[in-house]
Amino acid sequence: MKFWKMHGLGNDYIVIDNREGQISNRDAPRWAKMLCERRFSVGADGLLLVCPSQTADIKMQMFNADGSEAEMCGNGIRCFGKYCYEEGIVKKTEFTIETLADIKYVWLILEANKVLFVKVNMGEPNWQRYSLPMLGEGTCIDQKLQVGEVSYQITGLSMGNPHCVTFVENVDSFPVGLVGALFETHKIFPKRANAVFVQVLNPCEIRVRVWERGCGETLACGTGACASFAVAKKLGRVQDKVTVHLRGGDLQIATGEDGIIYMLGPAENVYEGRLFKESLL
Image (tube, rainbow, N blue to C red):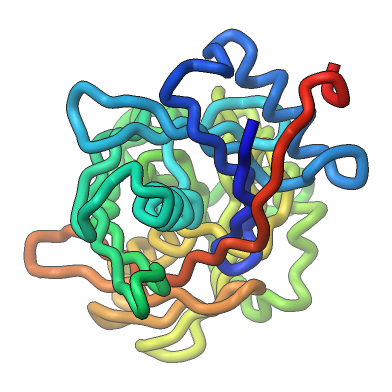
């Protein structure tokens, strides 16, 4: 079975063409756990499966390193778009991708017929608690949440997957590994959540670190970058277009008059290889 090892700003994935169903839905979580285990296998933050779609040009299935299935993945969908084009699965530079969240539109930016950047219509943020899900009714915008012995001002929203966003003075020195795990498994999030820690540098730049459910801290998170921008914009801290600085690199995030959030960033193919079934049994 052939695969590509890819990354978007250091958020890395194993991508497999699964249109013929070699990996069943039942077995996919187990495969994700095996393949994503670093040092003992390929190693990655997640597994992306290319599947046929009845409603879009192609379908993306995304599994975290712990085997849990994710609704959406911003860095992953850019890698997915590059893979589908360069492998000849989709033969156009603008196309639709079905995800568990909804259908996403992508635009590919090419050089010498290779995909350098991918722009994604990430849709509108959903501020309702039920969309995460998050206990309680209505919205949670800039409200207090007790996490361990500390009270944080948080905002909950969905960008196709659940995010809990909080602003900090210095994101580089913030204990993301300790606090992020507490946010992810907090009882207020029945299905866990991504914890997004944001430092506003100026109205056009923010610095972000993300603790992703099922993965831990990653070098970048596309939906987390969009969530951080959406919250900062709603609270009047940034303008309509920002550069989001993540540990693995930068993303350009912007919104239009329609409220849609657009993400632009790179996608890289690191190497290609073949999996041998007997080594995974």
